[in-house]
Every structure is written in structure tokens, then in C-alpha cells.
Image (cartoon, rainbow, N blue to C red; front, top):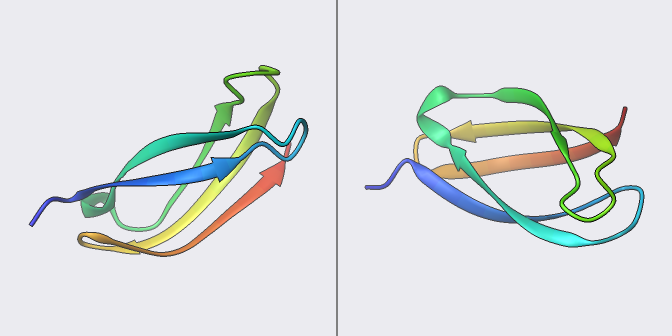
Length: 61
């Protein structure tokens, strides 16, 4: 079973959708990423178990 899961997310600023790849073997995660279009940073909160994303939240910084 692959521990990497791809998920489409949407920038909270410009609304552009893009894909991120999560390593679900790391458990719950919180990180900051930049939008691929407007370059503004935002936080991603992920609850996961091996091979599955249970919940994903996007928040403005």
C-alpha cells in the first residue's frame, strides 16, 4: 500500500486549485506552503492514517 496520497487543494486567496502529495506515514501534519499562482503562503492541517487522508483544512496565514 502506498503511503503517498495526492489531494487537490484550493488557495484561500486567489482560488486556484493545485495538487499536493502527502506522506501519510508521518501521521497528522501541519505545514505552510505557497500558492503556485499568487505565491501567498497559507497553512495546511492534515489528519491522516497510513494511506488515507481523514481531514484536510486550509487556513490563511
